[in-house]
Length: 99
Picture 1 (cartoon, rainbow, N blue to C red):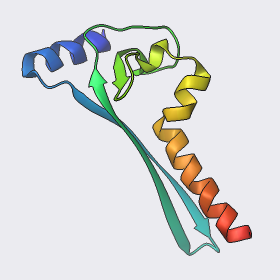
Picture 2 (picture 1 turned 90 degrees about the vertical axis):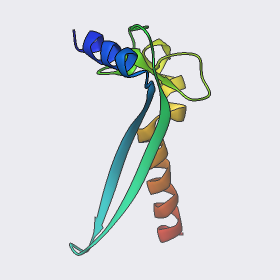
Picture 3 (picture 1 turned 120 degrees about the vertical axis):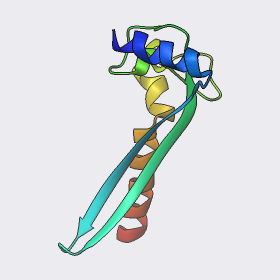
């Protein structure tokens, strides 16, 4: 039902752009907090497609692909997801910090 509402509203407004965003924060010494952001731009599909993932995955098509997150394997999604982007930024920071 939620998908129908979103798709109908998207069609009514003729605005299909969407994004997923996440922020991971790292607090050091209980005082310094650093944030790592991940964002993936995309579009809302005209119908739910795929059974993988959760939440809005079946209606979100990331830019540069022709599949919804719901149609992607976990491995495909984890290569391009907003969470993967943020986690990779955190990993890069930690490597610099501890090398």
